[in-house]
Image (tube, rainbow, N blue to C red; front, top):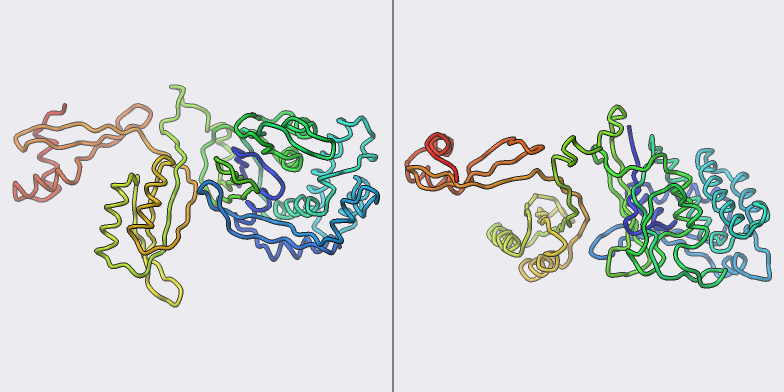
Length: 412
């Protein structure tokens, strides 16, 4: 079962969602062609690579011509499509797919209902402000089109960061979350205070309210694709939305719940993967760079062959880092290699518990690493350096050295 999961650890907005869906693989040109079926002129939607807090992704930006923006914002002019009735008419009579129409109407309808509740007006009398602007219409309909293209079997989400502080909107300065946002996230798990600004907009909240089939906190799945949508704010923490396309076994619904012991048999941590494409360093230099990256705190370093522009052979240097060691690895890459830039991606690592013990015997000492699954030993291995040392001393193979160690030693 194909599941699309919204990871809103830094909130959600319409443009972040649109960027994340394109980052996941939706064809921007196909999206623009579908949006053109709305029959509105005076806009363009652009996508470009950007990053926040070291996390790279796609930033979606809707640009509106000054004349069209005036139509949608002039307080003394009703505008072309500013109230719910007009926007509904626009979507219903457009040529976008029926699936996209249904979702876009659902999203706008939920915003209209929330605004009607806030102001005490009938739903059809609701006049949109921020979400009635053309760029917001393109964001919402664009998200609906993308989800219809992707066609996940189900959509899930976890805890949603709403933010903090205050927000300035058409109704004045209000505390976060805005009244409509608070109504729209009813029934969804939320938190506040992670940021001192609005992180979840009414548009983002409406997208979740209209789309999420189930709230999940843990689940077993196979990751298919990941997309990051870049937000507009540059903060001390990454302002990004992560979308995860997963393959789940429907028979395992709830299989992500804790083991009988109360914990998963593995630990999960967020790490950063740094990747640089290099085509002008020797093998010796790359080997030395690998050593320096490990010394700088890399958890893992690999080198993979690739073909770069002009058909030149190159090497992809990949280093896995904890957030605390990221700057150290960045400096090492810039100072110790020929690269002038690299990519950074937030990744999840699942790892088993491990334990290292000393094995003692007539051969001396050797380190034995054991990994555990659910608190029970799963497999053990003698460290390579110790096997190699004993193999050289005894004039035997690595395999024979391991048998010797395991058969004639005691552990501490």
